Length: 348
Image (cartoon, rainbow, N blue to C red; front, side):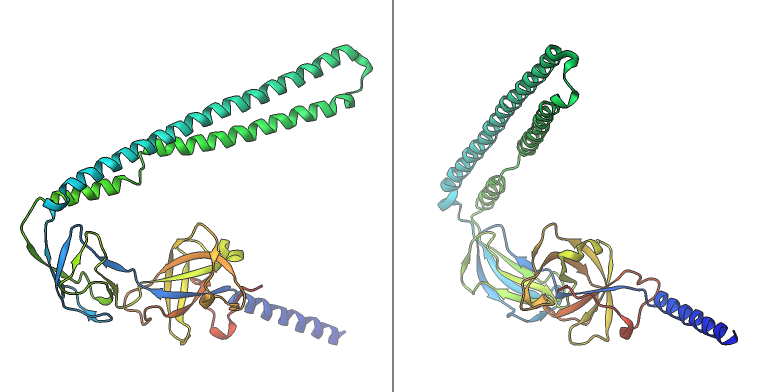
């Protein structure tokens, strides 16, 4: 009897230890891959200019306020004034045609809805009248089951009417919203042409300079000295000299486990010892293909949702570095040690 008691005591003790360990290391970790990046800043101007001197080269580190390039702003009003007026009138005409096309489509949908819903109403009314008359003729000689097929036909028509009504209402509402919001792809072009026309009234050549808006890294330089550049044409690009965010991908089967404001532990794919916390600031609204570089199964195309994670300043990552993203659901309660972490294989 004593040996049996000792056996149950040992079983109880082992059970308590296992329960304690499961509670201690219950921080479930989901692991994904991402790329450390920095938003690209594109230098451009809203008028034609001539590049005088470029003071930087691709890949150069610059400080905030450093001189990047010098250029001259030149008005071309005498050459383009008439053409701009013509282009503005042409764009306005296209805008009016587009609006009228939407109004015509809107009216056509309303007419089509009225016709199709009206036909369904007539058919429903006829079948209901037929059922009513049949019941009056047969009186009490017919069982209720006789009318079930006819009543099912009426129910099917009512459901069809509801679906058609929803379909037309959604399409009409979408087009009506476009008309009411006065959205037009031509408005920006018209505004740009008007702005150019205003600038080009000044016939003087004005020398100006461009400076670095923050500490960063020069990217592509798309201009050369003594060249003429059109308005709004990209001149060069610049990045922060350290990543400020991570673009990652959550497998489609796990997308519901990640939400905005969730905290990730971010570490280098080459060095797992140094981890920093990042916060989810955005999630994509559609399923996309996961790049092979960031896939846990490189030989098979996987799909997921793009996420954006903000990084704290002064991190040690480099631009375009592949990083590991670990989502700890209970990160604030207990941070599990590396040898106890449980990773989810996204290929399963």
